[in-house]
Every structure is written in structure tokens, then in C-alpha cells.
Length: 148
Image 1 (cartoon, rainbow, N blue to C red):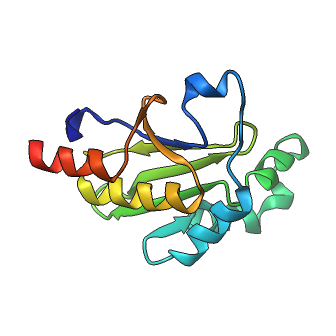
Image 2: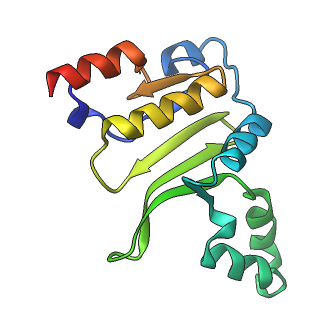
């Protein structure tokens, strides 16, 4: 495996193959706790200018859409704001229904990103996964480092 072959890793209690038989969900409370403790790197979507605007104008949002917005509170976090492009380059999303975290990278993944994701996965007693099936752990990251 090469680091540039890893695209949008996810965090889950088990591989997607295992989840077909027994599905253990990640703890939403631990997810919130982790992001809150690492505000030097992460920002909640709710704390971005768009999130603040949406929260301050919730009464103006049609009632049919309001519930979805309120239910998504603290389900999405961002990192690494790109001033030139005007957006965050990494999105972390907690899917309450599936009990997993997905990521979206608008930039190449590096060792620091993988170590951050692995720290989050370890905090949640979960796995960091490539394509939902290959486990990324400390040994894999070391091997990736040596392969580069």
C-alpha cells in the first residue's frame, strides 16, 4: 500500500465485511468529546460562518428542513482551512445511523493526517480503514513512510 493510494479513509468498529454480520456503532458522545478536546485542529461545522448563520436563522428555514439541520448538530467537523480557496480541505462526518465516521480530503493525505485519524480511531476503540476493508495501524503507517 502507498500513502497516495489512500483516499478518504473511514473509522468503524469493524471492517465493512464484518459489519454485514454484527454491526457495532461508534460512540457519538466520544466523537463529540474528541473533537471538543482538539479544537486547535478541528472546527465543528456549526461553528463556521455558515453554521452560525444557519443557527441564527433557523426560524427562517422551512419546517420540513429544520429537523434535519437540528439533528445534524455536531455530526460534521472540518480541518485545514485553505484561505486561497475559501474552504476547509478535510471533512469528517459522523453518520449516526451507521455509527461510522467518513472523511473527505480535498488534498493529498499525508502521514500527519493518518496519525490524526488513527488517534481518533484509537480514542473511539475503533479501526482506521482504507476502502472499508484494509486496516491502517501504526505498523502500516511506518511501512508507508519507508516506502515513500
